[in-house]
Length: 301
Image 1 (cartoon, rainbow, N blue to C red):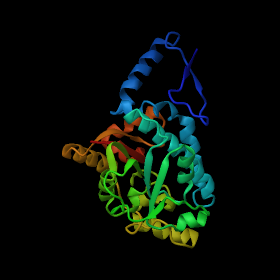
Image 2: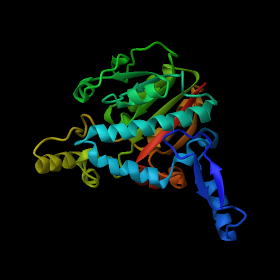
Image 3: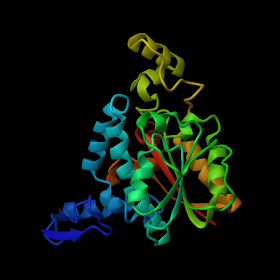
Image 4: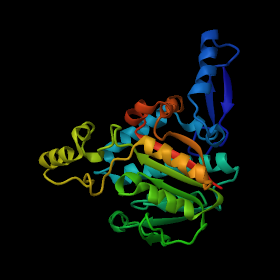
């Protein structure tokens, strides 16, 4: 056995992980490890090199188990998600640019109740959030002086204002998600990073709180069934505040932006999956059902 340090350990992450030694492993196991490294790591490996060690099955299971608290205990759900998000962005930023997160200026489009701002502040970043509605933040009792009210599809900021622009689980809630992506790139500095994470409609969580299968029948069916079962309409209503966004849509957007010379898509991977399941992004039909949440990482030209 050998002890291998994580490349960028944090106080909340174990500094060492025990892995089987390559010299003592069975030949078949060594072969599988070489193949898995080649196939399971998507293009943009350099941008993902600091995140890959943290993308474990244990992390995936922990985040999945938190989803049951989204409606009843948002402090638990969003608190844990905020900590994970800081680790994710810190690793992607370092991998894509070689720079530390502390001191960087971040725009979070649709940051929600405000837990993300607290977590990024603790990491030493200058955090700004843009929200169309400050109701969630007020309900959570969180006040952020750096919160700006505005639309993600028409950001109220000058060009090239931020080192990092980020959006999580917002694209599926706006009617024109790629207009929002264009706006985020507009306000990102040259050499900066835009991280765009969204829920894929055909994945199991595409219908959000309406259920794991109902949205496959149809968005309206899922909403009606939820209302009948819960006695109230869903927070996310199909065609109004919830839209069909595919994994293919995001990858095509990446190709279009690269062709225009505006930015380079340096990584695309499933946000909540362990690293050895990242290969799913490469399989056209499978990715729509199995990726669940797609992360697109752009480095602006």
